[in-house]
Image (cartoon, rainbow, N blue to C red; front, top):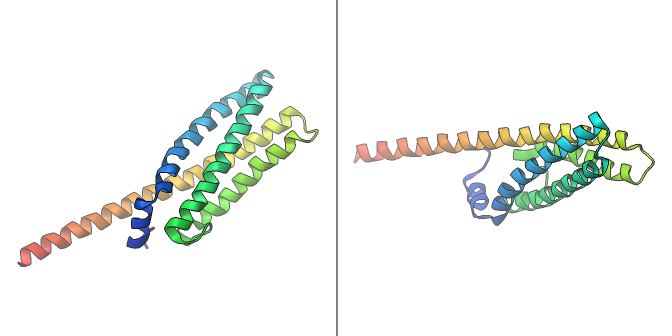
Length: 164
């Protein structure tokens, strides 16, 4: 079954939220890489706790932004904010990613030692990597599906021209 119906594909291609997601996803990945480096530096050397903490907060804010704009995108394309059949499991796992990042923010307001906070951040980051992989695989499937549809259309046109 194709990821998008022809109508959904048209809405996806016409939506400015598609561009927003296309910009935010690599920005979030870049922020993740920088933050991961800072968190690992702190965990291995004990240095840079403040930089690591700020980086995880920034990563979490970018995550919230992409989640909100992504749910708006789903509403525009599929008519529902979350858990559409095409992205159901990605959205389910996104909730875990969001919960762990939010737990990190909550840990900042508690007496959890900084090392524990950074380990929580790593757990959140591990789920983010899994979730990002889910979306990349879905994007690849959509591209392959589009290529198959385009090829089928080309074959159909060629057959029609031959019949004339």
